[in-house]
Amino acid sequence: MRISVAADSDDGVAGRVVSELRGRGHEVLTHGALHDGERDDWAWACELAARDVAEGRADQAVVCCWTGTGASIAANKVPGVRAALCVDAYTAGGARKWNDANVLALSLRLTSDVVLGEILDAWFAGRPSTEPADVANVAHVAEI
Picture (cartoon, rainbow, N blue to C red):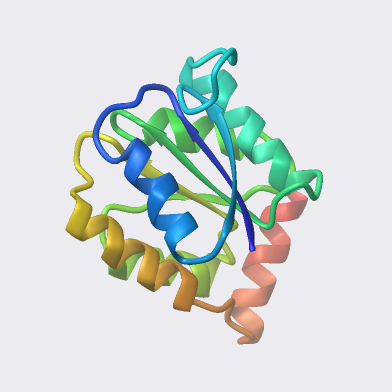
């Protein structure tokens, strides 16, 4: 899978996200502080990763900033992106299942290496629900 990763600083688990994804066999595209020469402010970096997903250059993205909030807000401004700020495995699994989330937002401050592994396990194991109510909710979000 091709995954775009953006971070506004190389703090916390930013570099670990890239190495963990590559270790799992994914092709990684980097933005912001993870890519020399790019603007590293969260709004710009996370927009680029989200556009990679929306425009088909990546299957999914992981966006990071200090709290994860700005990263998720910026990514969600891009049409076709459903970014979820996840602080644990349960939330990550639910975001994939009930929200068909295609962008994972993480807090560089709160996410430890151990929790990162658990979140990624749940994220990649998750599949979108086929329940009619869940499908209808995701479709409605696209219409908003």
